[in-house]
Image 1 (tube, rainbow, N blue to C red):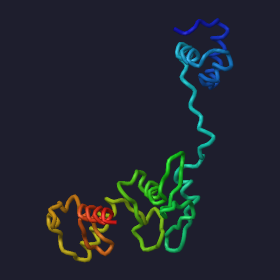
Image 2 (image 1 turned 60 degrees about the horizontal axis):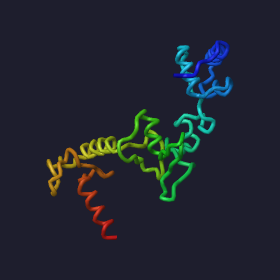
Image 3 (image 1 turned 30 degrees about the horizontal axis):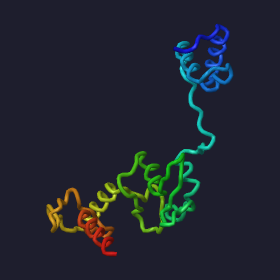
Image 4 (image 1 turned 60 degrees about the vertical axis):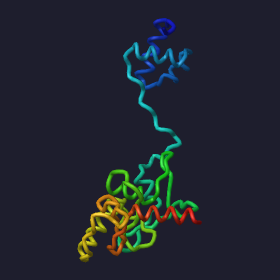
Length: 194
């Protein structure tokens, strides 16, 4: 049960809330606890003040911030001028979350988060142009279409190890296919042997 307030304080709270003051600010002004202020706001049936954006957050959208680091170059490609991790990955932070340059470019083009790793499908080194990047499903689809166009043989139902092609088949840039499950296993063996 909140502490009782005199009618003058209640009227003052109502005026503050209608002016957009939040519970913490109203509590400080009238000299009550934040929880009491919140109870009285609800009793007065006044909606909470909208949250103000943090002054520490960039006013730029993800796409606008990404564009500050991406520079157009010849042929419709884009180069990254922003931060690069020690590993060589082009990345930046927006509103406390880290994005790779290519994952952000993919989001800009498609409006959705990428599935798996995002790579550039063009031949321009370091390209981050939204039109040139693809996530795992998109890359598999495009490379499968290329393999079909150049007439590579239809795949078997499974690889030599028995992994089903419909789930694990991936393509190299030249249209040749490989098994992603076998590739992952071989990479793990190499890493364990090192």
